[in-house]
Amino acid sequence: QKEVEQDPGPLSVPEGAIVSLNCTYSNSAFQYFMWYRQYSRKGPELLMYTYSSGNKEDGRFTAQVDKSSKYISLFIRDSQPSDSATYLCAMSYRGSQGNLIFGKGTKLSVKP
Amino acid sequence: DSGVTQTPKHLITATGQRVTLRCSPRSGDLSVYWYQQSLDQGLQFLIQYYNGEERAKGNILERFSAQQFPDLHSELNLSSLELGDSALYFCASSVDRERSNEQFFGPGTRLTVL
Image 1 (cartoon, rainbow over the protein chains, first blue to last red):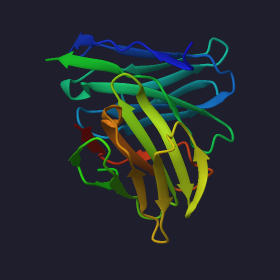
Image 2 (cartoon, each protein chain N blue to C red; image 1 turned 180 degrees about the horizontal axis):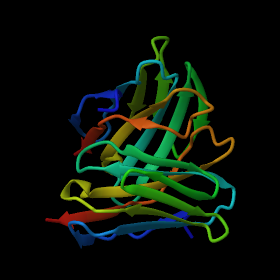
Image 3 (spheres, rainbow over the protein chains, first blue to last red; image 1 turned 135 degrees about the horizontal axis):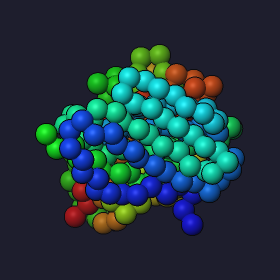
């Protein structure tokens, strides 16, 4: 079993839809959870960063962490064609010195 | 634009050759991380440097090595290249060890080994 599992998609939604992206993980030591957005042929861009369990909101984006279920989510409200990208979850534990463990990414397409 | 720069953008070389990838971190960032991204393996951590010293190693092959210089730029050296080394190589940087999880990625170097 891989440490971090992420459905690769592709996921196609109409403009304005609410998008839900998810990752599961097996290592209960993970405490830091990140979401990155990667446009084609570009480097990953940090979207959301959360520590431990709970929710975090930033504009149209909401990140949720449920450590009891080892499950994290990213919600995108009012999705736009410009949100079309690959979304990568990443995790690390205290003392990992920044060694991020990434999911393989979910490719999202938002249709006008 | 993250502020992290990488050169070259593209590199095409032959098996058995050696190449050097270069990364300049964001101004003020002391930590540099190298990652490899391939279609089958996804994004994988290779190695981290902090203020010139190696801090953490991931899935880095013995044929690969890296260093961070006094001006904080970093180089990743790949030698005895194999077809399977073809991938995107990313550099990332962060401010310090306490904020090592907030990493900012460069645009990457696409390596093709023929």
